[in-house]
Structures are given as C-alpha cells and as structure tokens.
Image (tube, rainbow, N blue to C red):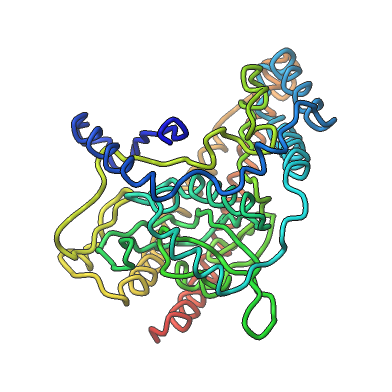
Length: 402
C-alpha cells in the first residue's frame, strides 16, 4: 500500500518562515499519517486506470503547439498568452476526463453523502493537520474520489469576499480554537443531492472545516456572512462575495501536459493534473496542536486583539467574520489614499511621445496599462466604500448578530 502514497511535505511561508524546521518531528509526523493509510485504502474503483489511453485530442495538440510557440517566439511577453494557453489546456483535460469517466451519476442521495462525509472527516486526504493554503489539493483529491465512485461534481472557487473564516475541528467535530482566514479565496466541491422530498439541491463538501455537507447558501453564510454570487467577471464592488463553477478535474497543470516524461501518466491521460491525485496526503512539518481552547489564527497574521486569550465557542466564527468586515471597512480609505498618491505621482513621469523607438513605444504601452489599472482600482475602492456599511448590516442579520 505504501508505494501508492506519494507524500508531499509542504512548507507554508506564512506559518513557518520564522520557525526552525525539526527533521525528527517531520519523520514522526510522516510515520503517524502512514499509520492511517490502511484505514483509507486506495481509490475505490480505478475507472481511470481501466480507461487510460494513449491518443491525443486536437485540443491537446493545439495546447502543446501554442506552448512551443510561446517558448520560441514570445519569450519576453509570453505571459500575456497564458490565459489562452490555460484555456486550451483545460479543454484538453476536459476531453480526456469525459473519455475516461462516462455516465457519471448526476446526483446522490442525501443519506449516502452524509455517510461518505462522516468517513472523509477522518481521512487524511480530506482533513489535513492544518488547513491553511491547501484547499485546492483537498478539493482536487475529493473530486477524483467522487469520479472514481461514479458521481459527477463541480469545483467551487470563491474568488472574492472581504473575509472567509474557517474554524478548525478535530475528526470528532470538536472545535480546537484554531481558525484560518482565507480572505475570500477558497476551493470546495459541489455535488447535487437528491433530498428526502425528491428535490435536487447543490451541496458543498468541506470535510476540513464542516461537520456535515452544507447547502450552497448555508455554506456561504457560515464562512463569509453573505450569499455569494456566481459570476465570472471581476466586480468593482469588493464588499460582495463572488464564486466560479469549475470542472470536476479543476487543476490542469500545464507543465505536466508539456512534459514528455509524463505521457504515460495514467491520471494525466484521464484529465487530472497529478498522478498521485487519488492518494495525495499533506504532511506538515509542524502540525498545529495545543492543549487549550484559545482562539488562534493559524494561516498567517496575528489573532485579532479582541479575541486574544479567549476560548472558542460555536459563536466565535460569526464574531470573527463581523470583526474582519469592520477591519476591512477601516482599511479602504487608507488604500484609496495610497492609490490617489500613485495616480498623482504618475503625472510627474515624463516621456517623449514623438520618440518612435521600440524601447520608448514599449514603455508608453506598459505605462498606459499600469495607469489604467490604477484608475480601475480607484473606481473599485470608491464603489466598495459606498456599499460596505450596508454590506456589514446584511452580514450581521445573516449571522443573527443584529
């Protein structure tokens, strides 16, 4: 079994940049997680391995050709073609995924998803020693697990919110005082559930932080205090929460597709980005454990002073969310002052518009783009400042704090 597990020892620059690594502790941590492996086994049906193939779709060929073209012809500004390249890679991976996983069930019974969820809470693939910064890994692994079980799902990527508070729990659902503030960036899995009354509803699956599957809107309120909007464009009003729906196989790493040594990678040929996606386990070099129930922010930055030395309760997350919104509101005017200062400084930058040399034309083009971005930022700040007070009022009502 152990040879199936490729373990990632992931270091968080936020959490551990100022701490000395302890190699002995890392080994002990790895040993402890390995003890859990017999309980979780391998991926359930290995549909991907059964349907693996060695041919390429046209989308895959086009992605590889574009990548070669960027490397050869656009070395300086190749990054500007990244969006196009990413789109082609995703199209390629989706074709591969659909080839391997046919006739996935579009919904699951509520009783069944609750039963599965209760096992995931004890599974080191879906509940890490600490959740900070690795929600993508957990979501991708869970999506793969569901596909192998024969279920269709989607990945939900929250793109913006003034805050996103996630309370850490142990495998028995008990709060321990640790929490993460993702500040509006988080990835979870969505599945359609057939409820007891026969209706179909989207549920979000987050065994790292939740005690059970949550309906879409309930989840959003629990972690952001407001109902997030499904939208693919960037809104000027940053007091809102927005999210995108992404495919089940949501992390197509281009470097895998473009690496000839990965051509025989079973998972890659089924539209996944990593060969170990079904068994990925994160082992932190220093899992966060403590004997008390004090509230501690664990993914970088200080615990708000108001909460220092306070014990966690089921109401803590609601209060942390509101506090984060209030702090965010205070920061907006400072950000506006900074942007206004930058815009004013731009007026003193002189360049010769008559100079048609390539270097000068390139400078003018880049300067214009930066200037336009700052003006957009200013508009966004002004609109957010206008709406933030009302947004906080809505959040308080949603959380039962007003």
